[in-house]
Image (cartoon, rainbow, N blue to C red):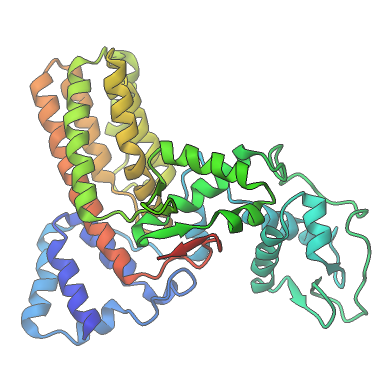
Length: 405
């Protein structure tokens, strides 16, 4: 009964038609979500069957306001691939892909013993990172534990082969120049990936010592990384000087969008618009085929290009800096919601196209009004999406140094 009431509450707050349709699409595929969320207990179909007639009418009453849309299955691969395109994969995923590729090419052959220490040395990563990568590969059935220490590559009944992993020729093509280097930059990318996903689930505490152990670096480097994240507003220090990631609440989102409306409309009004580039962007948006389902990467590309061309072209540097800084937490929130499988909203991009057209036609007041309306709708969509996370378990791959509090 608890979940039934929760669904009714969610349905009442969803005013945006396309988001509602996406909501039904996601929860209509709950059986496909089990790997990502502990949500197998949910089923929109089972829920519908338990509804009272009046509640059923309330549920289906949104049909008059929705557009037909193909359902999107939620899979582990989809969730993994929806992270923002300009972020690097976390270290443990890099290590997992390295191991996966070398097993497929038989550089790591059946029966070969994979010891954490040797792989950590070969990749110049921490043992904790390599251990998490091996656990991922084990879940895929490519390796298995054996009576000795470590794992061995599946597919052979022969005795375990304890060849020296430091000497075996391996395919290094999946690695880039930063992998394995204990620099603050590589640590920063990996930590930022995790802390930007966590606020939608609640408050998290960051443990410096565990983070230093995870990445095999000194606590001085960890403090430098956390200090940089603090400057971006992604982590904070509480009254007892502990590092925390504060939760995103509905009120915080309202406050952020209120500030966005003030800053971005002011910036647009004073902007020196690059007409040629904006016209090309507007045409690209205008010619999107009907029914196109944007990927998160495409959605972010449109959204950021608009912001850079229309808002950041203001000559007021301080105004542009404030507008950019205010967007950081909201972009992180949107990226986290995409990573959960919530689909991008095409309508919001079409709204930006209208803002561009009005701006280029010289209708400054109408453009500002359209941008304000766009931000209000974006605020309401974000709050509605955030409510869904209350009934979704956090991803299981959060690192040990990031603990719910």
